Length: 367
Image (cartoon, rainbow, N blue to C red):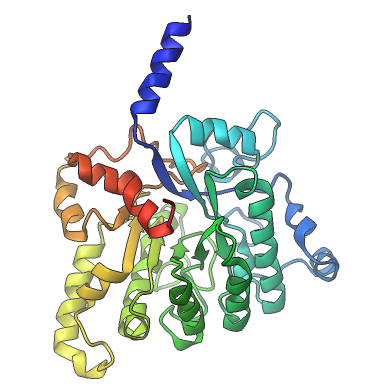
């Protein structure tokens, strides 16, 4: 009986470890974040709740395809808590089973969407404390994201300053569906701090935001919302380039998370064409948009576009550059990508190593 175990262990030791750039930790109970708030804000939340931009009152932001708001059916831990709330089970089901060397935490709590900006800052600080206390502190393979209340740039910078010396934080988390387009100058102090400290900014699509995912308003169906996740990231990329963010902050690193990537070539071809025609309108944009794309943006793989013939992805991958893609699972959500089976594209060993590990190790300083 022990021989198969030894063989599996040996096989696993020969597999290259993976960096998972999208792991969603969860609260063990709905009010757990209150434990990390100052007494003033505990009282405020209990008495007045948290007003956010989410218009879907009385509904879940994700479809009820599986019990518990779009989670994997097998992701409930033995203790009965919500998926991804129990560190021991997360270790077993994700880190150990999928050979994850590092997992980047992407909290989806809506602290950054609070209309009360002072409360939003307190919620983000609480999220940061919670990540360390429950996940990144006891498990060194998990790395935290500095959650910020991006509409208050001054407080966001202060939170970055407070956390940056803690190397368990490896990026800044900022939602893409902001009150104004992400390239606007109200957010530039955040970008200045990120560039100064060499921290990437991860922009993760979600069901919450100040704006809908579509330009015509809130969609009718969950299917539309799921598909349109890439729309907000295309807007982020275009806005930041055309507002001149990367001329001002040339070393700024942006990670677009959970929005796919096959849309990128056609978007950038059009941006380059229109920039050549109308560059006099944006004299602050000194170079073709495609040049900023190649230097300042990275993309996570989930949800991976899956054509009938996977080889059709090769041209897109090579155009983007396999040095710009980073693997992600989206654990514990229903559309989870298992690194042992996902991304079946005919890559060279060097390209596969870059996507599944090396790019993230370099970008997040995980060496």
